Amino acid sequence: MQSSGNDAFNASDRAIIRLLYFAGLRVSELCGLKWRDLKSRGDGGQITVFGKGDKTRTVLVDAGIWREISGLKGNAKHDDPVFVSGKGGHLCRSMVFHIVKNAAKRALIEGNVSPHWLRHSHASHSLDRGAPIHLLQKTLGHSSVAITEMYLHARPTDSSGLYLPDDDDE
Image (cartoon, rainbow, N blue to C red; front, top):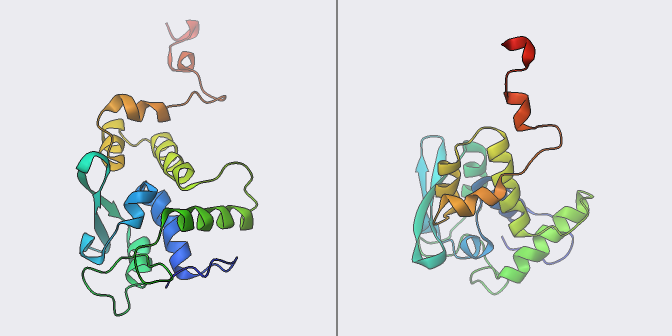
């Protein structure tokens, strides 16, 4: 189930895009995944991620993504890579960049779209929807909240002043 390298969009490519976004993974973390790192948990699943600085964390994924990823397994063994290259080993970073760029092109998304762009989108969208910053820190594998805070952006339609009482409220 590897990418053919052309503009075809297969189940593996779709799972790569969705997992980068919904799990907030770094491209190296995605490329290093083995089937032994994935465990069923209720309707969804749990992924053990081996990140920067030899830090390990777990990330939960919902039922839809879990089914999608599980559907890729076929006859793969416990120690086989989840995302396979044309030669049968782990998918390389450059191929993941290629898959993401092609998906962005098909979706008519302009700009510098990359696997990290999906990770950044995960963080920004999670915070926008009320995720606690300490949970996002844990999910992304950041060593401190200060690193995670870079995803806090001022929104043109929002201002801290809007949260203060106005003269009529006093």
